Length: 135
Image (cartoon, rainbow, N blue to C red; front, side, top):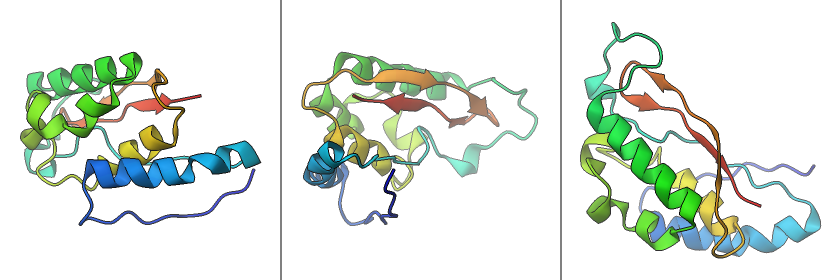
């Protein structure tokens, strides 16, 4: 499977990164795997080193559930506007560079496709490490 590394720009927001993914979409027809790596939540200021594995703060769990609902239902526009629509968006992502890879993957998916939730785990009470896939 062909692989290349792509750096994301912090100046482009979710819509820009979604469009980047859409521009990469034709590569899927050539057998290229489009893999994006980030973090579903990322607020290092609120890490709880004493949190038991798998425990999530309420505001992290709410955001994670909201994202999952949107991905599974294929609601790209709601995800792109997550800052306005998701619960506790700013608290989960004081800066969004760790969340932007999701939008590249979302844009590379077949338009309107529902995602699949492959993995969910939480670290330090505030880091949601979910994984999604689209066909």
